[in-house]
Image (cartoon, rainbow, N blue to C red; front, side, top):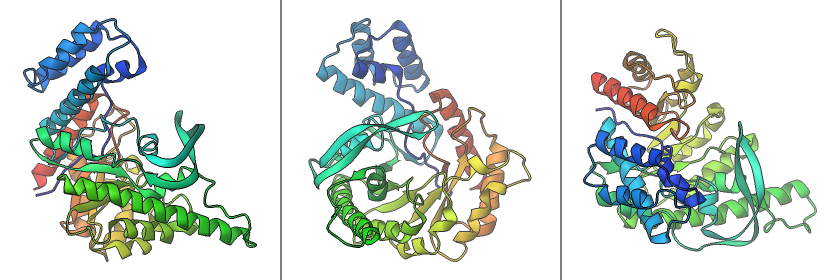
Length: 372
């Protein structure tokens, strides 16, 4: 059977977002919550949050206890949505988190936020600078792991932002030693020290997640190929993060919208530690049934034993891929790498509505089942 999963993020419902921005809830928010409760057949499970929304219509200042319950129930809604599409590995679409950089950085001592920077399109994130040696405040994905496991009906997969991306997206003040004569070497040494300490912090999180029932962990590394001369450094950082834990959990690395050819052959050092390498393919592919131009990079998987995490859903469009198109993409991959294929969207679906995400994922599952 071809394993299907979702990469991580889903849009947050308006009734999850507004209370944390002190925006009053409206009848429209309530109706949306009721609509999806009925559609997912969970109305009895979520009556408490429906009552909270009703009680707080027009109220911009909801109490902390009720906010915590809102997060819990948005997590339940999102998990049930994914379960209803039929995918094999589920998650809650990051309902517990703000986003993939600021959320973890705020859980680590030593960082100071400097302001907003542009990441892509018109998306911005708050960038921080490391000013003292980093130290983990609290393991920051353990509680969400326990919550999701408490109600998930399927096996779960938890994504975690990897150490290389957290370092690459931060300023590095602490490690920079201006007394060294060779400036270029100084920067490289500072980078390595930063990566070493952050890999230890991510490892602490992973170990605690495993101890609390996480058995499939996705390491998100969108910055992996940002600097061509650091590919080997990226691989070594992942090695330090995961080595010794590979028998306790299944590990996947997710990288999107990159030049994946730069990873090879360096990434092959991670064989035996990392089970799945998930890349984005559909975004660069054709919608023509007979043209699989987006899947040329599969040739790099012929001589290693990684499972190919195959992106078959373009997350940047509301256009829903047909079952036949997705089947074409999967069959093309199977012809090249054999049965070493898991199927998922290119990346998270947070920029799409729940309706579009549901339709895309349902078609993806149907295509995979047709082949299996």
